[in-house]
Length: 241
Image 1 (cartoon, one colour):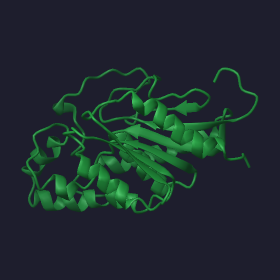
Image 2 (spheres, rainbow, N blue to C red; image 1 turned 45 degrees about the vertical axis):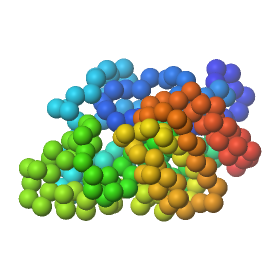
Image 3 (cartoon, rainbow, N blue to C red; image 1 turned 60 degrees about the horizontal axis):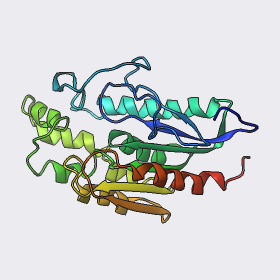
């Protein structure tokens, strides 16, 4: 907000899969709230790069939980929350996390791992119920980056599933006790409805909501209003300490 007389509720907007920097838009900002996003790879704020499997990173270090790139991204997410807390415009006691796809998964991870998160908005969360996902043929990138890679290492799928088990969004949802809104796309080929429902069912909170959109793995205009409503309900009613 351009004019503020006090610290405002804030949220960290987490990026979808890729190297592209997400500039502020209707999905990553909300009226009356402070918002922050960042390039999870450390690239500049105006970086533009269309997805290409040759530049994919899903399988980077995936043979080990300690070396998988998603561990680095999870740590970057927690650091970003600390940066947002430190901003003079943000009320450090009223912070939410949100995102779409990869960003939605990271949002739930942050809700599980960070005490500063007060509520979560997760639209079509990625990396969910992956043992179920990999039990079926995978035809789409970027997920196919993983199935391509497992063919190149001994005991490929067994090693990959061991690593992913530490980060599977369903598993981490069992540790997310923050008020959480999850959405799914009824025709989503990337995060299938049953996978998003598994995340919702696993959440360690009774204060949760599941929203079903008719489309696929894409933005829906309804997300703007419903996400703002969820964050307002859980941030604006809180008093700053």
